[in-house]
Length: 310
Picture (tube, helix red, strand yellow):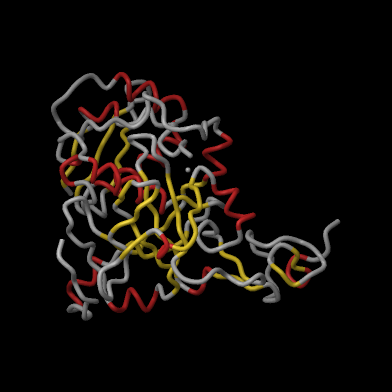
């Protein structure tokens, strides 16, 4: 596995604030490729918790000037003092955050390493999606890279801090499509959301609903794209914008959106799908994290699963 040492990106994150913000040609749907290429399927467990980030003192008023840097990942560069100061402030949280930054931005087979100058512990974060090839190679992030990295981070936010498998679809900053198979689409059969924004420029993080909302009796631990406005308000700093097709466009029968426009700005989005097993129904006999006690039959008052409230 190729490793990229942490150099110029020392200022990539003074990042307790990375999510502390207000949270090509047309191609037809692919035929299933040969089995040998199915290792490229994008099946990711998301686990960034907006609650966890909030309780660690992150502001929801926008990205500060000391937030995410557009400097690239490179073996050349400046002192790592700025990154070290930030990272040591909350090692477990920032280790998790960096895992998602690298997962999104760096391609599979490469990794980024960082050695803590205080503890001498070596941290290694593996790439997967390769959404920002220029930035990952040491160049200053383009606006397209800023947008698609933002979208990917937003897609990995989970209200409950759960690790949930999902399908990530879209294009990287160079308009290259993320590979997927028909099997992946069938396994992750529930369309979920579109995510977009630009935290590099303080423009926010946004999520839309891809398809219909869940009925009142159903819930999801992913929450932010599919559930009611009352739940979505708890997903800040990721802000809900309504149905994806009201702000985003796709080409032909593609299973993902290629562009989203909000407040007169156009963004490169990421589209997600989940499996039916992460959708829960009041009455199945299990009190899920996304359900509440009560006397009714809805997710926020589910007597059958969670019993009456004390």
